[in-house]
Image 1 (cartoon, rainbow, N blue to C red):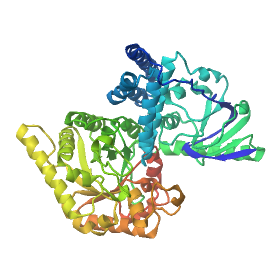
Image 2 (cartoon, helix red, strand yellow; image 1 turned 120 degrees about the horizontal axis):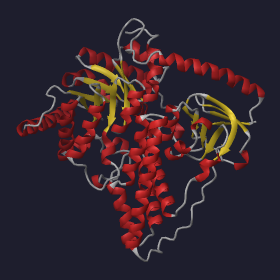
Image 3 (cartoon, one colour; image 1 turned 45 degrees about the horizontal axis):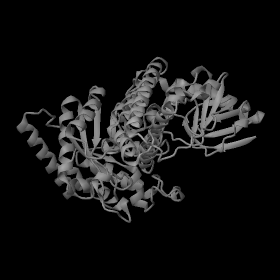
Length: 544
């Protein structure tokens, strides 16, 4: 028996024979063999159309098997295949570097994916895998290849792979999939999302070296603990059988909370929202019965481009999100570029300690032309739903005043142009620095709400680098200093007439939620898949 530890991505238990995805062997590509760039561009265009058609078929299959919301994944992939920045980069490599179409796709895909994967934000890291997936499909189309390995699934099996693309996941016969185990991947990948939607147990990031000799060997996995067993012993199988029965009962119990308000045992209501990175993610929030969006990371519209997005591009994204929420609250965090989120055209200076440097609101106040464009787009979107705006990385009253002055300037411009917006749109700030927490009594006089970003608050309070894995055990939101700052922020916010939410990872931590409820928190925002279980937990607690 061999036991491997990974990260649980989709809860549940699975036992059955293993099917290992064959190792892909990339063909050798010679980067300087392109003799006719125009011919390579024609080949590229043909491959793009082929992939788009394939994705269209998968989109329809997704609609039938897992629903309209999940079908949107393949619509996003279709857009990525045609992304202007990615296409321009590929075409430039063909025309200027004389690369073959295959080489150009691989090189451009690696560049874009690496940029996303280097970020600290897990959501953006997962989008890097999407880029690699669609570029892999383009390479296959160019080489007339195909991912026929999915045809190897002929009996109920646990699928083991380095990673799986959403296309591969959907091409597999759902009725024969017992579970997924990947050596790479993330819990925020579209494949992990699909696994949760299809209620298939899944484990990611096991870092295990796969062996095709495992094919047919009995395997077992626990998607809640992240454990994977190769050739499990009888006592393990018995334990998993019992846990499987418990899991099914728990899933049934969670469904009882769908459609219900989030209330404590003594009747206090707490808003339960989801965090998103792009409008397409709203589907998952709604599917998990989220009551709104507490954090819309607006940076995605600025990434993977060669120039700033226009006001119209921003407005379209924000408006789409607001409309899809159908009256539920949408809190848009303004641009949080800097630190781990590097964007070339911003031409930011190199910094020895970027987490403490020129980022977020500091950039926006120094470059008001960028900020005003985003603020106008957010204001315009507020005419189409319940939109709120939130400023990140605040450390002073002066910053809030300056940001609000620019917001008023944007409002004045829209009024003069006769463009509608919500005159009473809520304005909030992120509390993610000790400075903001300690002066939250002063800050409360200038905003409508606080949203506590626990990820950065932990980092700055405890002097623990979020990106340093060796310090992970030190960077806990349960540290007394962090909890005291959160408690202070909630008390000061309420005293100043603000409602207070939490949007960091700690918002979904079952060990911390009782503390937050006791402190009197008004809103919690989290990954969509954790909403129902959090609602159930809150129903057992007593409010402040």
